[in-house]
Length: 117
Image (cartoon, rainbow, N blue to C red; front, top):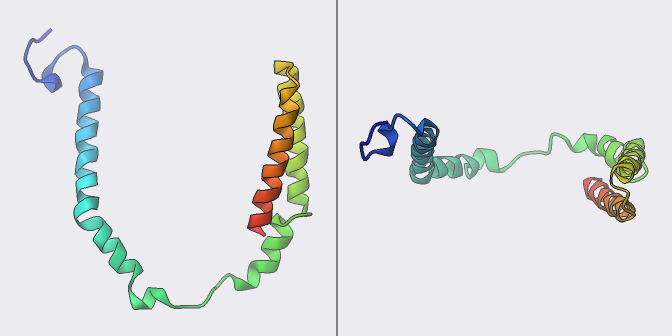
């Protein structure tokens, strides 16, 4: 084993030294983003050509609402999958609190699909 003071030159403990090297590489990326990357991105977003325009997906609103909206077949399949997974988890754990989790998942799914539509 080498007894030098630098952690990157130690023969044993190469895994720890590689973590330090990766951290140093990530530091260079963070420094680039801090200095110039965010300014470049903000200029691209704030450019007048990119600021205005028409919604190209406005014609697809009806399709998205019928696919992801409340009452669609996708929502029904999510409910069925949640109930099957809940029963599977109940068989594995034998805790009635799993059924409370099923109700919470169904409420979350209803809210999420309501926001999506």
